[in-house]
Image (cartoon, rainbow, N blue to C red; front, top):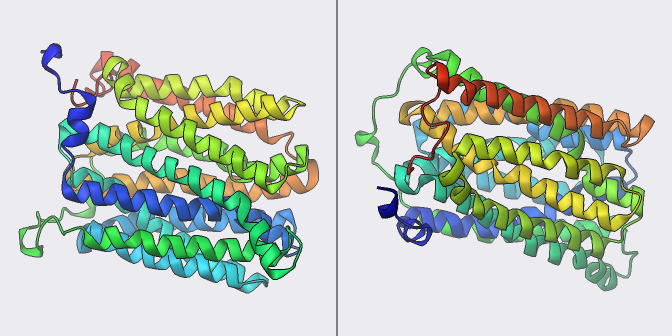
Length: 420
């Protein structure tokens, strides 16, 4: 009965030891990655490289993910998702420190590729690891809390990062936008990520090798193809729109409003806070409306704020649009991922996780690469209509595949969470 349904806090308390340690890892790693996200673009530009080359560097990691996501997902299934996460974390530390140490094109490109491989292992192993360490009753909540934990941690990362170049510049007696100041901030991010791996090391393998379920064949993993295609295609469209704009929003604020680094850090920190609270509200909304309906409503609701961000001549309304757009779009991300994991079943989670990352990151890479060229010639003007059109198209496809399709025998879980 609905009146006997376990409450939000009860489900949080039901998380197991591995899940709790993973949440701590998410908290610390998000802190380190927030520093990287805020200053990587600015570091590359401070070195004297142009936006076309920056577009290439931004495109390389998601392109690597697109190419290797499914094989890395299957590798994670073979060696264990915990071990895959540890390998990916070690590679991420190498990539972050390597980028900070590089100034020339070969080094920046090489460590961007390393970063892409690290992100592949981390991202394709994330959802299956959470799924195998949770039951159906708390799974939606665990996915949302993990996403929110990572998001809240970037709040502190952005706050610290906004002040880091100034502190480092004063220590080194260089300008606040000197490459050395940004380089020092990137080293701090790598050190924080190293600390983040400690909770992950303390997690335990869920099963010993002899107890693992028999691995299905590649053909079995992709059957039935229709389910995978319906999960896959909307993410392709979302990635196309997001990749053209979202990785460059720090550059957008810098070029349009001449925002100083400290204020830029505060704006991105505010984004993390509102995104975190929105994500935590996701399971409650999913219990009421269903996961898929919540995802679609959030995506459509973000579009007016994307317009406000792109076309407001004033910083304050643009910042409001920036915060609201990010909150609404990211509210649905863990809900959709949990829905996909349930639809996949335990034997296909690695494949579906890889496909979702491939669909999102592949188109994100291509559109980021194109975005660098567009910015060099026409600025940000054409990018906002492209992203808006992609969000509308993806929401329409999700509605068609998982909501209207229910009436014709479609997805049984489209209208309710697994606990509903």
